[in-house]
Figure 1 (cartoon, rainbow, N blue to C red):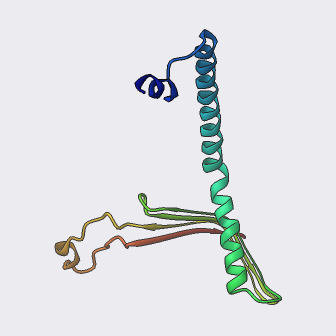
Figure 2: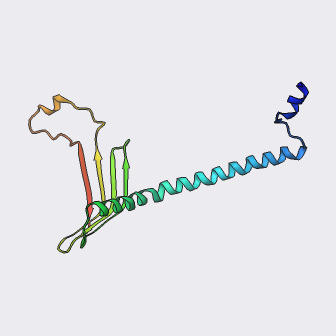
Figure 3: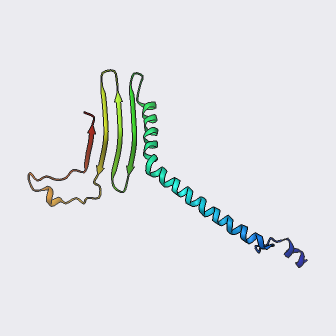
Amino acid sequence: MDSNISTTLPSTAPSDPTAATSNEQGGLVFVVLSCLCTCLWVIYITFYHSRLMGYILTRLINFKYIGSGQYFKIGSFSFSILSGKIMFRDVVYVTQDLSFRIIDGIVIFKYWMPYNPASSKKPYQHVPSDIEIDTKAAP
């Protein structure tokens, strides 16, 4: 009975010597495909993710808020929690009597700056704001 059980269990040892080389080649193929997928993912994140987010945001805003006779588009949109930035590019809003375009825009949240109550009690002293908005509008 014991000999019957041992013959039915699968073995991890290769049955022929060519199986070990094919397994090594399979590992090499896996490494090459992993490197290729990693390179493609880095290229996508670097160059295309913000554009895809701009396209998705444009579609959502057009579906929810923009009516007929109006045009709205966001070229690219990026949001970074760690650095506290929202970046957007090529924002266009056009109606029958209004045209609005932002070429570059950035919103910075300074949430990491500690509050100092002593500096706020001094009169007429410039205190940096918590939110900065910089835009480049079309001339």
